[in-house]
Image (tube, rainbow, N blue to C red; front, side, top):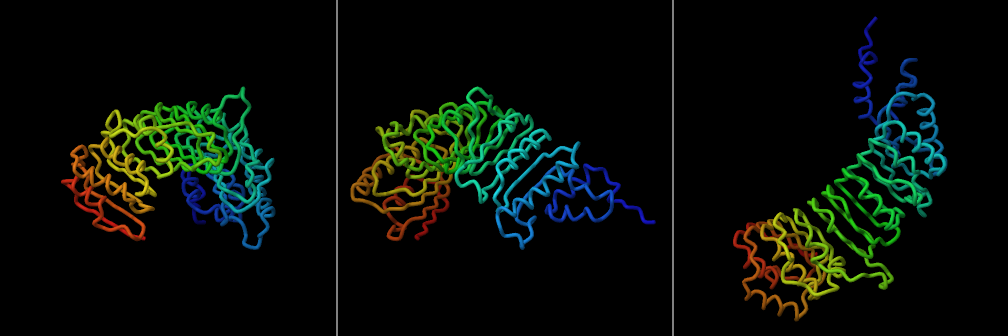
Length: 386
């Protein structure tokens, strides 16, 4: 008889092979032999996506029932092996109690990575993240969509091993977020997308390196995150202007001493322009090499002045990306003409400029001439119109 070399492989080796296959194919290995009947239930990673579910099952509730049949077999036959990763990205309507019980189960199985993508159910964020998840000592990657994080006030929230956190359309309060972030001492990457409620955001984490915010906020304070290398912010205006607290460019951007890449949206510039705009920030952004400004309004004097303020504060800038949504007004053109005669802005390190602008913006405009005259080592300037 031929030797079954595959079945005799160490489980660690076999697992590293099987997790590279779609889960549907791995489940089908149960028909190979008696020894393979429940082997798939001991995988270290479970990715639940639409490939797993037969095309004939179209109802979102029925699709979840099919998924639960798979997960119940895992619970019934996996009593020893760790489950390091679970990802749910299938179009279905999860039962809240089922999902809650499953998360509590994998939280005790050495979970390292949890990803819950949007589903057909969580339109109202009525799935509340179970507190048992905060007891995962090895969890280092967490992505949550359309759910609620609302732990009891007396409970501890935080992840001692977490390095990446992404919240998308999640219901969470400022208080909970301010309790959570400092209690993730190894957190390096934080992404906040379209949160349900406007947040008064105070980022206090000395190890945070990458921050991306696209949501509604009442205020943002980054003074307590000295290690930030990359920041991408698009502030969405909150409908009730009463919530706005006066902010300024120096308080938010001026503390980013280690920043290497900065990407801002014009709406965030409006938020930062509540007070007077200095010629330059109190301290230079010496490490900033890439600056991107999206939807810049050349008919808004405050936005142009803040853009120049950041440029003056970044002596080592190498790449500049501008997305221009509105063309000039006469006061702005006159202002840039005046600035052209001044020598308080030089960009000796600038090598690449990429400008994407609305139709009507001239490639040899006041702005492009202003940048070229201040950039002696400029190698490439690209102007695209749309």
